[in-house]
Length: 339
Image (cartoon, rainbow, N blue to C red; front, side):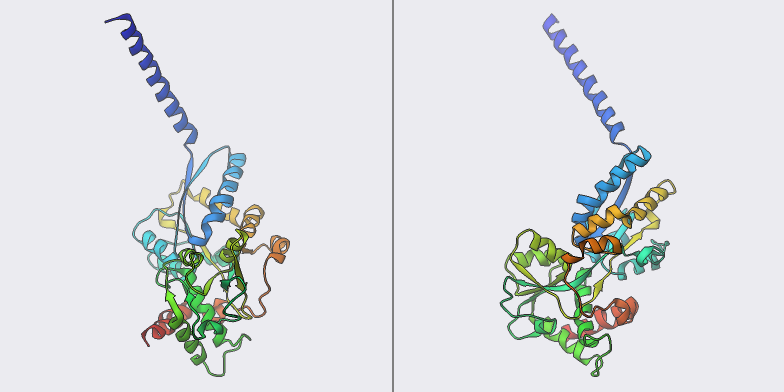
């Protein structure tokens, strides 16, 4: 064997040794704790861009240890189906309380999120109407979405928590008559409004985020959506206008622990992350992404970024989630579709 060939083999051996050493060094450096989070679509940007990096830095400074995150974002219905089928989510943020309630019934959740601050809500928003610049259809209320010729875009309630909130906003605005007091006509005005709006709905995308994307592509005259999502797009320079109805619903997402997927060694870490969500740094991050945060000191610093809601109402004003999901989402909405 020639000297040059021997030198080449030796050199390759050195390179391989260096590469393997570097690989294992990097593996050791990147090894650490891991949290797996599933969140509904509107949570993607604030969590990935702000909250998670802030927690990682805080944990590094506090514990001298790295924390990795595995994340997945989609409509609440999709997240629910994946977790129920065995997806390894340890923390989940749902747009509504319907999904975690079912997961608790299944035994996947044992820690009651209602024992957390704000009953499990660390940031909220409201249902609004998004129109093209100048509001060419002159839409001023949820009732106007039922006018002849108005093409309404809203997501599909079978897969989207945002759609379920939109239905509740429509129904509640008519049922409570903008005063918090049930209409003299009972549920009839609300049922009629749902029917008029569904007749105008040309598309039912699977998530609130996909509905917003379709609206950006030119579909629809008006979109029922989350206020925070609408504000994000307007901040990007898109020519939209937010119509704040005189009466609309407060949208209260729920963050939950999927106990079935958490081992004893991860419990303290997950608990620290949950506590972090209600801390000032995370609250500022959520406010920066146009959520109405629950820390009132932080919210007051950002209050001028939000329109006033004259007559807000909550899910409790509609009887709570059990009643609202059965009578309105599964009842009145399905009836409006069948007629």
